[in-house]
Length: 140
Image 1 (tube, one colour):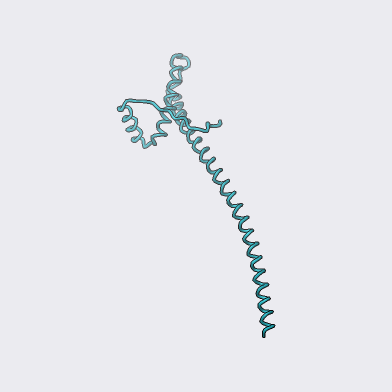
Image 2 (cartoon, helix red, strand yellow):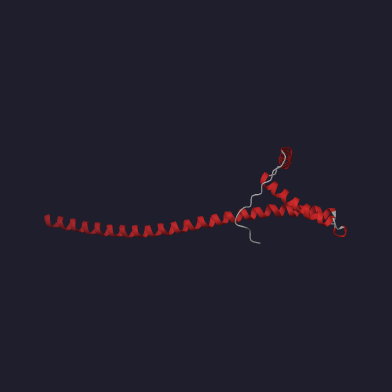
């Protein structure tokens, strides 16, 4: 499943007491606030889906199946976001790697050009040394 390329921000207004209760619960569980909220949304969605089953008794899931489904929905909500974050990080890494490779190619070209300049300067120095030696021999 391909993830969307942008985060969808969900904003709701809740009572201050509810916000405090949620934060207290998240702190007690030692959960990251954003991850806990994603789990809560996944669990809420699952609970709403279960209501449909409750209205039709022959389709009611066992308590154990409901608990497992709730756990899976929570994990899925968190994993979807983590996958999205990893896709973004991978994209940034690929762009960064491409820039580094391009810069490396430019540096290699610059080094080759400097090596050629250095070889030319060595040749000129060698010629000048020979000319100086020749002039010393003529003078001496």
